[in-house]
Amino acid sequence: GANPTPGPPSYRAVPSMSSPMSVIALVMAMFIFMQGSTALQVHQTSAYQTCMGSRASCSRLWLDSRSLTGTLPTELGMLTRVTLLTIAVNQLTGTLPTELTALTRVTHISLHTNLLTGTLPTELGMITSLSWMGVFGNQLTGTIPTELGALTRQTIMLLNDNHLKGTLPTELGALTDLWLVLFCGNQLTGSLPTELFALTGLRRMEFNNNQLIGTLPTELGTFTGLTLMQFDENQLTGTLPTELAALSSLTLMGLSNNSLTGTLPPDLATLTSLSLMWLCKNPSLCGDIPVGVTPTARSGSCATPSVGTLLGSACPAPPPPSEPVAAPTSIVDEQPLKENWFRKRDVARQNAFPQKHAWFRKQAKQEAGMTSSD
Image 1 (cartoon, one colour):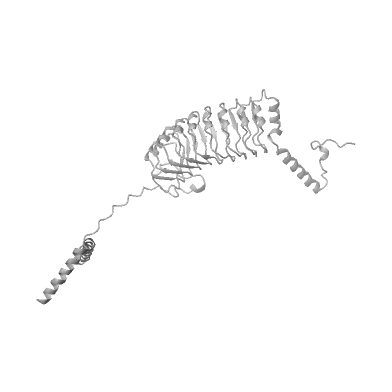
Image 2 (tube, rainbow, N blue to C red):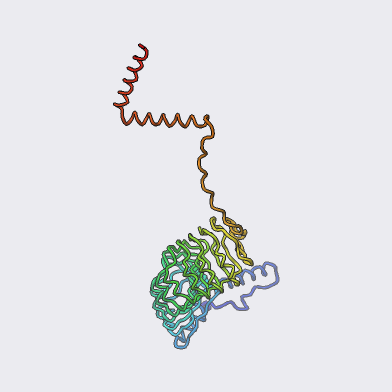
């Protein structure tokens, strides 16, 4: 008869347990079955299919940690009633589909910890309902689109641990509801735009492991609710502004591996919540560390207290003024100075008045002859 239609494994396919080889075969079969069952793509999951089948009522699609492969389906844009879309911690590849802009009700998009590539689409700025965006831990490139400044409901923006370049868009200063910003682990350049200091509601900012330049602005003191601030592993210069003492809620300040100089502001001792200051590898940073504050990181190159700094000790005193040249103390010391002075004078006269010098020499010879004849 005709071959039966292949179906899922049944109890009849289980080998006999009468020999060790049968046990091994069973284990191998189970391993292959498990591997095949987990290597699904998004559109093959029952959650996706259920959501697509009832698009009028589907408000959430949660597919975290499913070992999913393949790309993000463009059909996700058809789930117009979805408010939460999270497909994080998988093995997804490819780019972010622009069709996501059709999700006009979504407030939470989480696609972090995958293998996504390409750039951040400028069209993301059209999802004005979005308040939580997490795409960290991928392989995204390009710059941060200025269009993200239109996401005025954004409270959490997690773009860290990608390969993003360029400067921080000034347009991000319009996101006044932001309280968590993680841009660390990229290749961002330039200085901190002054527009960012309008984000006075920030509670946590991480810009470490980039290539930022310039000084720490005094406006950092306006973030009075800030609990964590990290600028480690950049190229910052200048001194620590005294205004940092206004960060009364700060628990961690990370500024290691920069080129900061000067003395630690003594007023930092008033920050009673501050328990960690990562300041190592700022070779010209000096001064006393506030009592009760640990100047090290939990691990890594900053695990040794104050390595590469002058912290924990007083700043070096300025060099003394150069001593004046001692005056000659004897005729023996004075004679070479006089001879050298007369020699320089004679050379100057000879160069400036060669004709006069020849005349004086002739006169000297004549006088010498007259003296000898006498």
